[in-house]
Image (tube, rainbow, N blue to C red):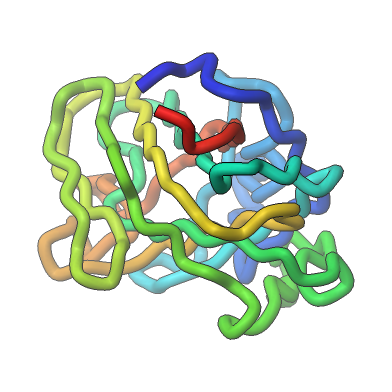
Length: 206
């Protein structure tokens, strides 16, 4: 997959149902701050639970004559075994007032919008930079295996018939195969640190 595919999508108003406030803080806004090394999004304080995060696109993605293709990179650079274990991606074209209210979820859950406004992305191609296991489950979530590595990128390519995308959502999900059921790969507590979330968009032409 070409990491320079299409054009970069600028994300704004990071919102999460929960963000870790201690030892950082490791809030969802850290996942789109352009810093690929320091901090990121984590969930210590509500571990072993599913959580959601949503972002607005600063501008609607362009109308593509052959359909929209997205390239999504989830970058992890915090210590060994702190990558995501299971996650699912979705997009929306709903009005930005319907989701992503900018609440990072430190004291109260942020509003990431109703499930009905989100279209789950079906991964077309996907890889993990450490060549570890990454598998698509029946619900279109991706399940990773332990790579015992510090620097881990998940790169997912997905097509959608939607155009003019206004938002992107990440769900982090539990699974029986993960340490403490996840949603991260940390052997200590099942946490993760999503250092940076990057989105690129282009057309579906071969």
